[in-house]
Amino acid sequence: MTNPYAMGGVYPNQGVYPQDYSQIYQQKSNGLPVLGIATVGGLGAGVVGYMKNRLPVSKDGIVSDSFARAAFDKHIDKNLSNDGKEFFKQVKNIMDKIDSIKTPEQLKKLLKENKAISESKLNGFSLDTLLETVNADNIKSKKETLKKSIQAIDDYNIENMKEAIKACWDSDSKKFVKPDSMKENLFNIIKKTNKTDAWKKALKYGGITAAITGGLAILYNIFTNKK
Image (cartoon, rainbow, N blue to C red; front, side, top):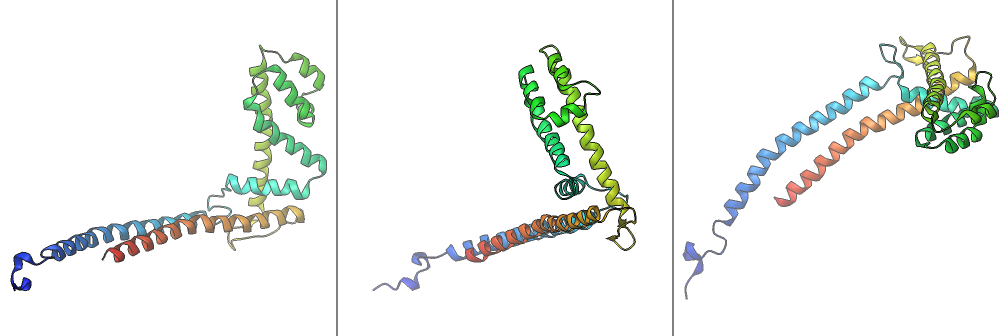
C-alpha cells in the first residue's frame, strides 16, 4: 500500500497554505496602514470641524445663517401675535411658490391668498389695483419685484436676529448674558436655540467620527474572518 504522506507530489494541499497566507499577509501589510490614515484623517476632520463651529458666535463675530434662522422661526412661533405669525407664514408661502408661477392668473391667485403681504408692499396701491395691472407682458417683472420685496423682508429680520444674538454673547465667558435692553422672551429663545444647535453640531461632527470608527470595525472583522 502506498503511503500518500511519503510522496510530496500527491499531498492534497501542497502549496495551498503558503500561497493563501502570503495573500493574507499582503492584505494586512497594504490595507491596515491605508485604513489607519483614513481613520486618523477622518477623526481629525471631525474634531477640527466641531472645534471650529462649536460656538454660536465665531471669533470674527459671525453668526451662522442656520442658527439665526432657527432662532427667528422660534421667535415667530413663541413671541409674535397671531397677526405676526400669519404675516411671516405668508412670507414663506410666497417665497416657496413664486418661482413656479407662470401665468397672470396664477400670480393673481397667489396675491389673493396672501393679502397681508400684498397690501403691505403696495406703497399706497390697493390689492385690486395691483391685480388689474398684472398681465402677460409684465408678469416676469412683477414676479421679480415681488420676490425681491419678500426677500428683503426676510433678510432684514434674519440680520436683526444675528445682531440680537451677538448683543447677548459674552466672548470672554463663552456664554449668553442678557442685555438690560433685551426682552426676556427673546433672550430665552436665543439660549434655547443655541442648545439645540449645539446638539446638532455634536451629532454632525460626532457622526463623522462614528461612521469612520464603524467602518474600521467592519473592515477589521472582514480581515480577521478571512484570516
